[in-house]
Length: 105
Image (cartoon, rainbow, N blue to C red; front, side):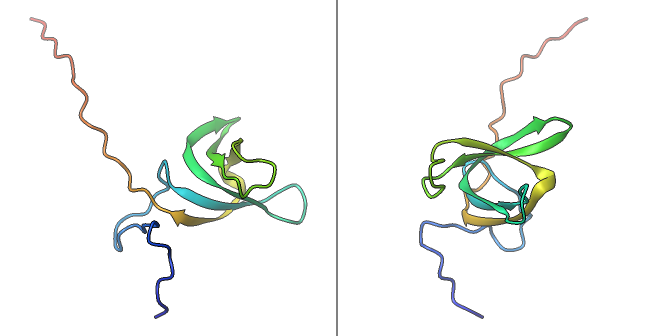
């Protein structure tokens, strides 16, 4: 087995746990473009949004995207070819929201 050469700041999901794309994690998304070459997007995943009748990944682009740093890119899920995890942020559990309990009767 090859040694893990990931930088110390990168955290991988625990082995055996279900994988999911998590907000705040950095990814390299390779997607189909209009030409023969794929589009490569480096950035932080911000969530999902509706895109027509499809779902899109919302990515805040990194400075490595020449001339596109700081832009937000929507990538339709149907054109995603691969997703590389650059740094993983575990999904935060939502704190139980206080419910207003109303009783009628």
